[in-house]
Image 1 (cartoon, rainbow, N blue to C red):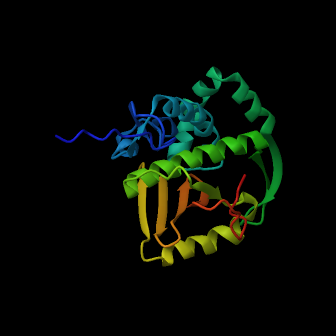
Image 2: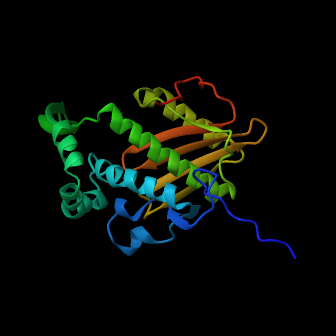
Amino acid sequence: MKKKRRQTCCYCGRRTILAKDHVLAKCFLPNEQKYRRDPILVPSCNECNQNKSKIEQITAVYFQFGHGDYASEHMLKNRVPKMLRKNKKLADAISMGLHKRWAKHSSGLVLPELVLEFPHETLLIFRKWFEYVVRGLHRHELKRRVPLEHTIYFMNPLERDEVTIPFREWVRSQASHKTGSLANKEFHYEFAVNHKERLTMWVVLFKSIEVVGVTSPRKKNFKGGLHWL
């Protein structure tokens, strides 16, 4: 009789799983069925599940700003204030990062608008969240975790226009190109696999944030500024 193979955590690849984790956590979206339908669940150990949850309590607040759809407006009005009351450090960081600037709109009018700037430490948190997401999507789509010897590289956000558009087109040109979406299409992703080079290429779009990345066994900087942080 064959022994049942133990599953390991898709995030760390080392510990035995004790939980199922939502790749896109519920705290990012309104509590409505259209946003909760067909979630992606992946095997996770308790430690990674808890660490990811701590990061999500921060990113779930920041990602609502600058995106004017119903879901973000609902979150900013109803859930974000409650989350900030529980996290004074985060509330203070957001308050310090908000400032007004004058911007020219398509109508030609120059109007004031609110801008939210992020400290470097917050960008590191964003990067870690996207790393969790890519690892979870990799496990879901390819039915295996990212190998332990692989590194996940992300583009430099300052080079977004120069890198994201050609990278996205490159991914779409691959024969292995696939797409997926979650949460009433609030969250969208695309990926392709290069078996010869042992690479996977990812484009993740959530709210107004688009990130591109590569999983690779070679520790090197990719051309085009793909090494983010």
